[in-house]
Length: 93
Image 1 (cartoon, rainbow, N blue to C red):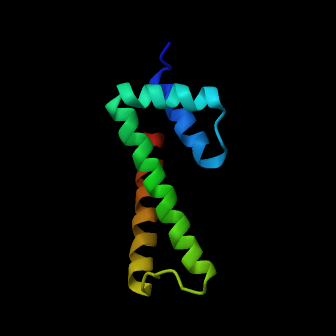
Image 2 (cartoon, rainbow, N blue to C red):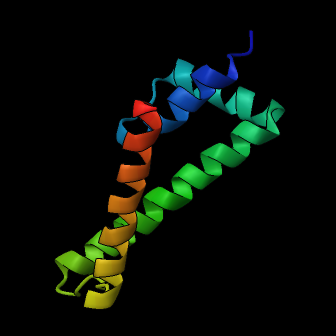
């Protein structure tokens, strides 16, 4: 029996954190063979995990993370405040 897309997504995410049992591996692989959207989701998750791992490994090796300049930080803060105010005024209406 094929697992649901919801269960497949759950297993995709869990596979990044722990080894799946043989039964879970079989269920996921079978589902991914039959379901293109879940296969794409699984591939995207693995790609993001690999990207984050590579980036954080570089940071641990002494590289600095890219930083926003002060003007960009201030602009983001302003937009967040404005969005919060808009949301607050919408919910009080």
